[in-house]
Length: 117
Length: 115
Image (cartoon, rainbow over all chains, first blue to last red; front, side, top):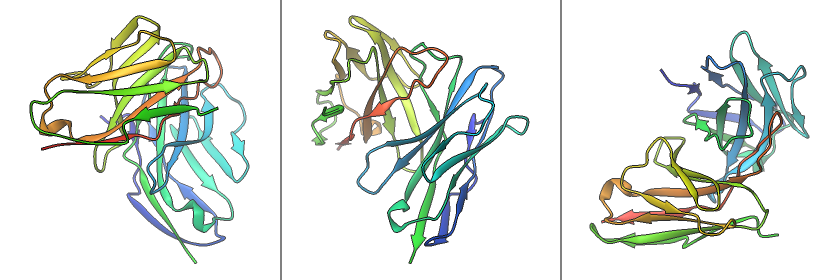
């Protein structure tokens, strides 16, 4: 079974609209971390936002927020007021365990987001 | 700060040739990682290191070797390249944090083609 599932291979969104990118995860570890990365066409991986499994509040970073629903095992990324520069691949990733060790991340297959003017 | 840098950016190899990819970080991170990214896939962990002189296997280690002789450098070697190793290779590094974000910061990637 996939540990990280991103069900939207591609999305088209009008500029200035809000966007929700879906991510569901599968783990039996009570401690874990969830990450979102952006990969523009230039290829680099840019860290956007982090949510720990014990965090009580949803994480926010500027226009990015993470809609964390622990019981549903979902960690959707919300981008408010989308901009043309948001066009990119977006990856959801998970670290299993409490952190502090060199735990590799498990990545989903990504969502290709295209913002239309 | 340059962050995480990778050399080279692009490389074409013939089957059977060898090469070394270099990753360097100037953030004094304890942990370093090598991932590969194939079309339509997320990144998969090849090898990682918890400190100088220590390395361990990740999800897809076959055909690769690594070394970490200095804290700031992490080398990925291909002894006998195969077409299946055509991929984009990313290096990442992170702090040794517990109970908080231990975000991995990535280099710009190396695009490797094996003919």
